[in-house]
Image (cartoon, rainbow over all chains, first blue to last red; front, side, top):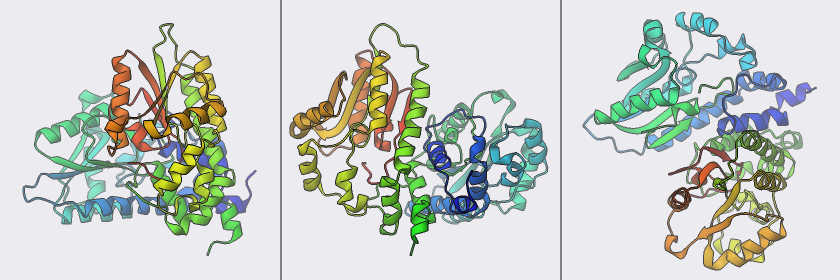
Length: 228
Length: 228
């Protein structure tokens, strides 16, 4: 039984091992966070360390991005994932014990259709700086195009994600296919159009693997769920 | 200034962010661990959590490996890195403030030539189980072939790494080239010989990237140094 002090200090050796292994892509196809992690996971998500890890990652991204020479041809691109990269589902997942409960497609659909996901502030700041620097930013999401386009576009706009090049959503033809093949195809098409993908940012390893992954990839922390 | 309680609890939010980012491959080409991490890093390396993270990773590897059907043709292969994957340099790095001091090629050479690196017990156990299961295990290291072959082979033997298929060391022709291109070439040759690379295990992302990386890759924790 963890003590309050353990929880406050972000302790819990199993939780630490588990989280590290998830972020290093050593654990795959997991369906739920092990229940014994719940107290530590909650403390991590709402107690400040998750926000610090996000900020640290964004700082790394920017230290790479700001040294890139952006040419005048408008073909220097970045790819950002949407869910839990640009906008946050942490409030929704709180009701799912932060991922200790299994994925609930109907519940998530209702949540996403409300269009109320708050921005992740550090990533929104990065997004703005990338656009200011002359990059074309593509938002690429596994959300179904037909069902979620309006709600997602509105949600992003409300949360200050304005000025991106394209919001690319999963078409019906890719239904049931994994994120790796869908997102690889999207990136291949962008490169076919002549875009140079300087960076690729996502909270899932399936955002960052496959083909044409980009010059650098960055894994945004997400201990709550796994997308194959 | 961290208190003893912070250190004992593995706290230190910057250290936690830094370590997570290193293991997720978000920080690259770093030369030293930031000095402010030293207390936390030392506690991590010798206080138990590093060993627990190693064991957790090895458990993930085995839960994947033991379900593979090993055919009778002797071509089912695993690749393991050597330094800080099979055998440990933690004792040496203790004298380098666990990586807060810069890399010292002469010092490391003298240490490696002594052949006294202890086994990482959890990985040695994995190594034995892989061989027992019928896999051919290839040890692939960036150590220079001419300088280190005898010391490395003796060190591995003394530490119980017995029965591997081949110890593949960096030939003079690859001197100065990065690990990604050298190790990619090795794996390509093995696949050319007909081996199926089921798994690839290393403490550096440069062990796990490039070509022919294997069916699954596993990142062994190492917060002490970065090999490009």
